[in-house]
Each structure stands twice: as C-alpha cells, then as structure tokens.
Amino acid sequence: MSNLLEGLAPWPQVDFAEFGEVEVRKLSRIQKLVGAFLGRNWVAVPHVTHHDDADITEMEASRAEFNRSSAIKITPVALLVRALARALAEYPAFNASLDPASGTLVMKKYVHIGVAVDTPNGLLVPVIRDCDTKTLTKIAEEIAAVSEKARTKGLSMPEMSGGCITLSSLGHIGGTGFTPIVNAPEVAILGVTRARPVPMPDANGQIAWRQMLPLSLSYDHRVINGADAARFVRFIATSLGDASIFN
Ligand code: CAO
Image 1: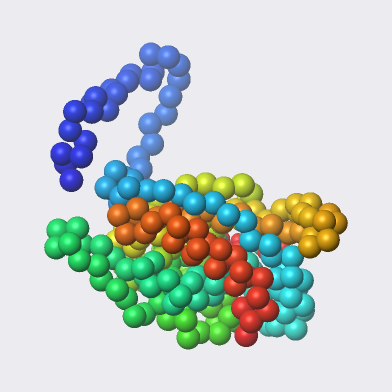
Image 2: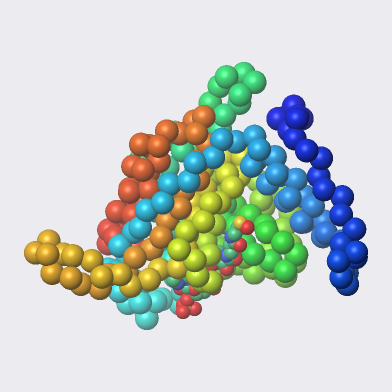
C-alpha cells in the first residue's frame, strides 16, 4: 500500500493563522476511522463511476398509494435496496470480493446491503441482512430503525459488517450525481440523488413530464467492466419501474 503514494509531494504544513483568525477542532473518532478507510479505498481501488437515470413516475404513484394503506412508510431508499438485491442475483460479479494477493474472487451467496447514514458524528454504514428474502416493509422498517440508532446511539462493528454492496442516498437533500467511494472489499456502491421532473418524448414522439431518478454507480474496475456496470444500472432502473418491486 505505502508505495502507492511514493514520489508524491508531502502534505502541506500551513500556518493558517498567518492569513486570518482560525479555530482548530479535533476530528471525531468516527471521522478518523472512516477517513482512514475512505483514503485507502480511494487510492487502492481503480474507480469508475457510471451514471444513468431511472424513470420512477409509476413507482412514485404506486409508492404514494402503498403508503396510504401501510403502517410502515416506504421511501425510495427501501425500493432501491430491493432493486439492488435483485440486481445482485442477476449479476453475481457485483456480489464478489477481490483478494488481489491470492488472485481470487470470493462469490457470495448471501445478500446483505449497506445503507450509508449521515449522523452528527460522521458517516456510518449499517448493513441490512438477507435483503433478497425480506418483504419491502421489513426492509423499510429496518432502515428506519438502524438509521435512527446510528444517529442517536451509534452502531457496533457487527452491525456494520458483512455488506455485499452499499447504497448512498442523498436524494432527500438534492444533487444530480456524484462519485461515491467503493466500500472495499465490496466492488461497487450505488449513489442516488434527487428525483426531478424531466420532459421526455413518449413512443409517439409526444412530450410528457416524467419523474427521473439519477443513479451513480462507482465500481472497482479490476473486477467489473464498464459494459457490465451499464447493464447492472439499467437492470436497477428497470426493476424500479416494475410493479413487482412492491411485492
Ligand atoms: N428523490 C426525491 N426524494 C427523495 C429521494 C430521492 N432520491 N430519496 C428520499 N426522498 C425523500 C423521501 O421520500 C422523504 O420524503 P417525504 O418526507 O416527503 O416522504 C424524504 O426524502 C426524507 O427521506 P429520509 O431521509 O427520511 O429517508 P430515506 O429513506 O430517504 O433515507 C437515509 C434514509 C438513512 C439513507 C438518509 O436519511 C441518509 O442518512 N442519507 C445520507 C447518506 C450519505 O450521507 N451519503 C453520503 C456518503 S459519502 O459521504
């Protein structure tokens, strides 16, 4: 690892007080820990980010209807976890981990999905287990419970271990796309930003307003090639538009 940074200029040592008033704050324990992992993954994993849009017009209409009669509120995040679980079953290369030292890929038969949660102390990624066998409401319930726990009490290492792929949703805030950092030893991470209405031509060339959800998939190019990434994201987009995503 260390020779990856060989030959680079040293980190700048600046006395910022020379330029104006400053205040020095200590990083939190989580910021230090997460920063070390993010830094390693950014330099050690050859990243590519693939962008696409999902047409979620019908999904949003069905979600509103679903939420009218459900005690558990479904947000787009729960549906995305479901779509990711289906995509991992269809494209097993995305449910793998690379061991570069032994030149092997571990292919996982389970489907555990990490969901990035923004907390006052930093970024945490709780893992929702067996997402391929859970109902939509169960997934939504677990995301709500674990993100609340992450924000208020923090999470144990077992609660953040064993993920196959990570979902990082900034959709409740905004954005049109970003480059999430792969959560190694996973090989891909799906970033989601805010759905927005876009005028789109229909089959007859008529323009209609559609609700489009931006998807940004970063992947480890040692394991995943660009065409597979494009198919994987298309599959997720199609799954979100399929009514069976609610079943
Ligand atoms: N487009 C439009 N609206 C969206 C959306 C999207 N892509 N995703 C969620 N929303 C809406 C929800 O429907 C909800 O709307 P209503 O309140 O009107 O029903 C609202 O945004 C708030 O959702 P929420 O935050 O309560 O719940 P969530 O399921 O969308 O997200 C969680 C849960 C834990 C993923 C999110 O709160 C969070 O912490 N995200 C941050 C992840 C992060 O920091 N990633 C960056 C990592 S790299 O530093």
